[in-house]
Length: 164
Image (cartoon, rainbow, N blue to C red; front, side, top):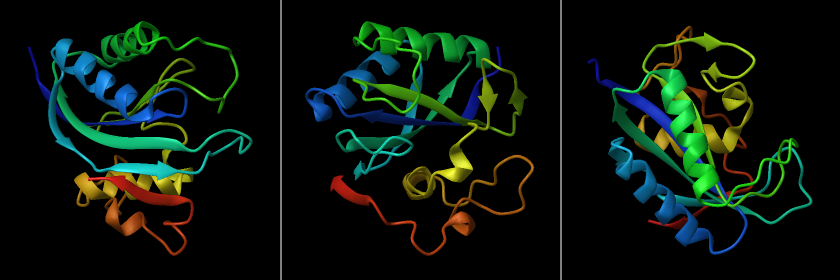
């Protein structure tokens, strides 16, 4: 059994009691045997992709797990469903919880149902900014730049620290 460390997740919510949604998601993650190693501050972020919706609260996690990428994805989707997320088939819509796999060590997966690194990570300045708090020196697979090197001007636009 191999334990993968340096698994990075991004959690987001913009429906209901946002702080409680994040706290519940953390409890569900830990209850599934996924060990939380680091947690970022909670950030308030402007919606990305479809702006006609409430702002999000987001946080990043570094976790350790012996789950395969497919098992981790399935586990995170089950957590989203348990928390009341309804799959609408639409992207970028309001949600009670969203848990994205950003990275799993230096693993690369490129399939229709799973893409690691996350397919939109490098296009989302807010995600880069949040992850840089807990993994500034992480070097994404296939990149020479570290996460902190990816921070550019304007990366703080639409993002603010909500709570430590």
